[in-house]
Every structure is written in structure tokens, then in C-alpha cells.
Length: 366
Image (tube, rainbow, N blue to C red; front, side, top):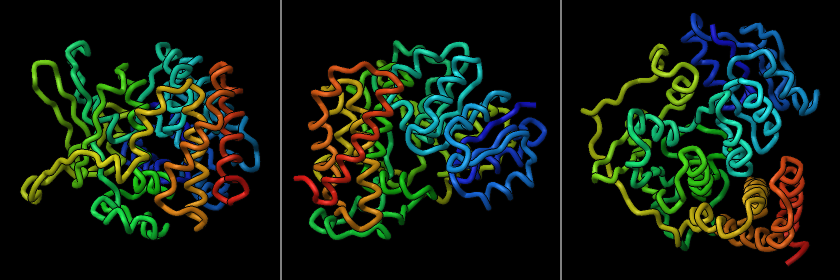
């Protein structure tokens, strides 16, 4: 029986993880549950799953994230931001596997995280990176030519670029294929999520970003592909359901099937398009950020967090994300170039970048 800690249990990934555990109760047991502030929902989960440990970050502090993982076999990390970075590193240092649904950990601290993988394993809970992992099974990585990272294009792919300035948060939250939390849904709309995923893929699979290509696939059936040096391409197909990568991370191929298989008779077509970087410039940042020092990824990520918040509050127009993020990255470029990549510095510049970005959004500085 594998003991599972869920950090971020009341969010979208957390609740779907509990769905997978319900379907595989003979193999998986909830060890710990941690939520940010949703006490009512956490109480319902505790009543059903009887974990030996549960906590609220807003009440008990971030140390509860480390206490939660101490007696588990695998930790599902589905918290926002860099809140769980210390607990991720604790797990990897102490032989506890990590199922990572948090993009920020690798974006901000990829070198720190990947240097600790070995004693414990790191499994991506992300449809694209899970798909890439499956495409590489039994393959020598030296034969890899290119990773083809698919993107849905979000709700505005076919929207006239001139109209993007006036789209609202409500419009952005209407994703055509996926049911996700607000933050990642907005990231999908701006295509910032693809920049974060390019960085993640670079660390997870040990390839430079020049070998990672974003391909827009509106149907979200092909979850990513890998091209090999002999010209062959392997793709992974599945219905758009996050329970599949969750189940794969927790049980490999041994889980009970909780996801509907692809119905090929109902698929009218599968289409693929080039990413429109002019219309969605945030998608470029995953490539552009590498000309800066490592801590600039933290600044970029923090600035994007502030932009998402500002957009959801109606303070920032949709077409201004890239400009704000780039201004913040450039503002901190010299400061971060003199600093080492440490957890302390990541937390420091994450906070400072958010503050500066918020001032730009609020018009306090130009």
C-alpha cells in the first residue's frame, strides 16, 4: 500500500488525485492532506479519507508542508507558486518520491531540484511532460532530435489580435478543453504556460530549449510528441483528463482505468499549427529567459503571477502581460546576476518581483 501526501488537496489537481485514490484504494492510501485556506473542503476530505496528518497553510504556516511529507512514500505537490519548494527538496533528499504538478518548482529552481533526483524519483503531473516520458520509454535519449510540446492555444487562438486588448477574465477562464484552476487557465490563455513547460521539459529531459518546439493542437488529444534522429515521431494520445498523468505518476501502468479511452470514430480530424509568437508573445519567454541569469526565471515567474492577479482583478489588459513581465525581468537583471541560485534568493526575488510588477500594473511607477 503506497502512502500518499497531497499538498494542495482542495484544488483541481488535489481533488482529481483523490478521485484516482478512490479508484485504486487497494493500492493507494491518503497519508496527509494540506490545503491553503479552504477549511470546509479540507474537513470533508479528512472525514472521508482519515489521513494521519492534515493542515491549512494559512493557519499552520509553510512548515506544515514538510511535516505532511515525513511519513509518506510519495508526495503530490499541487500548491501554487514556490510555497512547497522546501518540502520538494526535503522529499528528494530523504528518499520520498515527488509527483510534481507545480510548474514553478522547476522553472525557478530546476538546477536545485534535478540535482537531488536519484535517491528519490520525480514524476511530472502534467499532460505534456507525462506524454513525453511515455514516448521515451525504451528509447535511448541520444537518439532524440526534438520534443514537440503540444498546446491547445487556449480560448483566444482564433480571436483577432486587435480584440485581445478588450477580452475579460471571464472570457479567459472559458478554456475549450480543460477544467483547471484560474491561474493555470489564464496562463493557458496567454500561452505563458507553454513558456513554463518549455523550461520544465528542458530540466526534466535534459535537452536545451532549442530542441523543444511548441506545436498548437486544438483538439488536445495528442498530448506531446518526440521526434528522433531517424525521422520517426512517437506521439501519446489520450482524452484530455488530468487523472491520467496523476495515475501514471502514482501507479505507472498498474492503476485501474478511470479515464475514458480515445474514441477514434468520433475524432473528425487532428490538426497542428505553428505557435503564433507575435500574437502570444508570452510563449516566447521560455526561450528568451535563458539569456539572463538563473534567478531571472524566478523574477519572470513572479511577475507573471502578479499579472494574472491584476488581470483577474480587472487592472491589467490581456495584451499587456508580456510588456510588464519583460520590464520586471530587465529591472532585476543586474541584481540577480550577482546572486547565487538558492532557496533563500528564490523566495526573496519572487517576492520583490511581485511587488514591483504590482506597482507597474497599478501605475505607481512607469
